[in-house]
Amino acid sequence: MAMSGETGELANLLKKVQRGDVSRNDPRIADEFADVLIYLDLLAAEMGVNLSEAVTCKFNQTSEKVGSTVFLRTEADWRPIATAPRDGTQILICPESEAPFVGYWAHVGRFTSTPEMWLGHHLGAHKDHDILGWMPLPAPPTDPNASEG
Image (cartoon, rainbow, N blue to C red; front, side):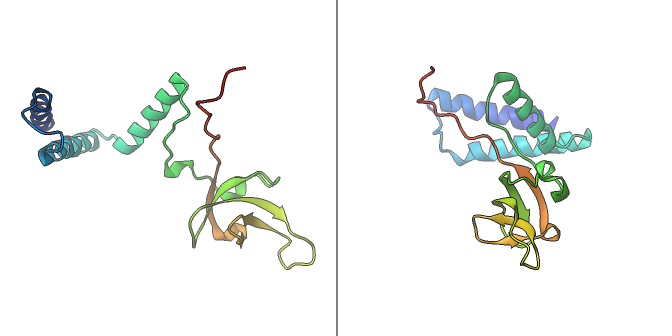
């Protein structure tokens, strides 16, 4: 019931914004949004729902249904490096000791101590044991100004 009360307080403030009695920048609005979210998260947890996972899943289902290219990513999107393509395909690689980078599996020659490794445009090289995970690169955005042929 606490969530209903907080939602009512938010709705009352939003009504006052529409009427012109309260500014859109009133800090109470952010506070009420936060209260609603806090109570929603607490209620979801009480019901055994991971709200972050549920929101990501529902958002992505809706994006797919309406043909949107916007999707949310989660830690679950990272895959074990053993499953990554080793054919030169560029992927997003997450090493242990640095930020993720775009890289690919490469055969660098028989005269090195490590003839195959993950390479990237950041001039680094990594072996499998240095990598936390990988994921495919997203599709490039479509050009909204492109004419249909």
